[in-house]
Image (cartoon, rainbow over all chains, first blue to last red; front, side, top):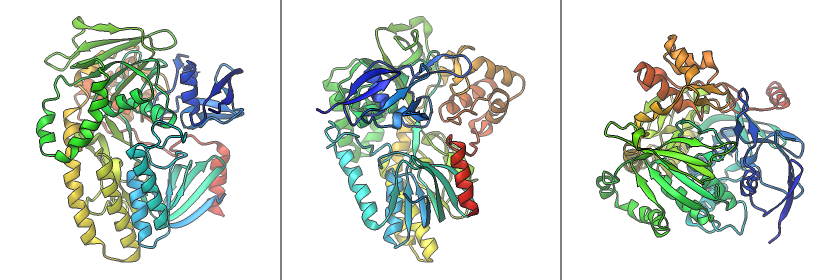
Length: 83
Length: 466
């Protein structure tokens, strides 16, 4: 099956097409997406349907993109707060 | 791509209700635009897999969803995808955003079919990565064919846990345990007895779960989730006779990497609220619902209709019926055409089909005693990092409504606008003050209903002047 290559915080990952960025990250065990606003606690995807805004990432240079609603594309560059 | 649309009726939401409403209105010959924030139509109930080769691609539900979309389009409804409404003004003018920027929709009438989302109750450790809603796990499975983790505990209450379990299994996940807060399912039997049409679906959902021989526990609730940087174990306890967690009998399930906890659904009322519509609290329908006249779907704001879960959590069949009622009514009103007799027949069917879901909602309420689990350090508002202790402090200082708590703590002011924390906030205020849910109220949403970049706001406002 054709796989797409994406990078998450500079690390390359091969993912099957037809998955969301959130799904790809969860499969790869990279579930900490950002740190909370005051207490800097680790946070990951929560609602999976685009209403909680916990899964915001920078995708191809565009900030505040919801990982749970975004389908992976070949060559996609994903950056979390770590980048 | 067209940035500005003018139409007769705009439908917000392309799930069962929205598609049904759009089709009904378009069949009457009107110009109908249906918008949905997702890249694929179908809402939650008909959610579509992203990959053609997905194990879910040929499921009956997915196929039915595709058929509904085809019917709506065939009737002439225009569907705008990845288009998320953030503002609404009298006239009506809806402001939305798609991947290319601002989109403006002008319409004579609005049908709000924004559906529902998982109803969550906070507990210690619920903000850890790996803790999600059951709906999130279902979406991971159905859209992307991925389980929520390697070893999952699924907990909470309600029949929705069943299809979530099934979806996780189908995506190859391991369910360590499924935990239902109700101690017995026997009270469901009288309800099922009078709705034999539901038996095939119930069996279809039960069989994979029973066949997989997953450990099922009844009468237990999640007490806390624990782990560094992500969830690793979950603490559970049985509910005692008063419905409170009996911590003396707590137990730990360790070596997990995902925990799903949910208590049914809650209507997504921001758009109807910002349009000024009346809402009511209904314990049998998921909480705060938009109030509509049953045989036409009209809210108390002229030109604004609502259909589906936003009027009360009832399931997909009632959603489609109420969508058709609202579509016919909105179209009839614009065309000055009589649609009463067809709507009355639909309304009678709606009444009957709603009964089953309402009965289920009543049986599977989140246990009152869960609030006692909240330590002062437990985060309630995830967006703004507001703790239960801070909220209790303001209540002790005299705040006895959601609004008061919100003003003093910022709880509910973050990007999710209390969609996630609203239920917990209300239960906390109820517990500490004894006020009713009606008195406590719901967090009033503000525009923008979703975060939008400033250039989109600028473009939208320029479109309004131009």
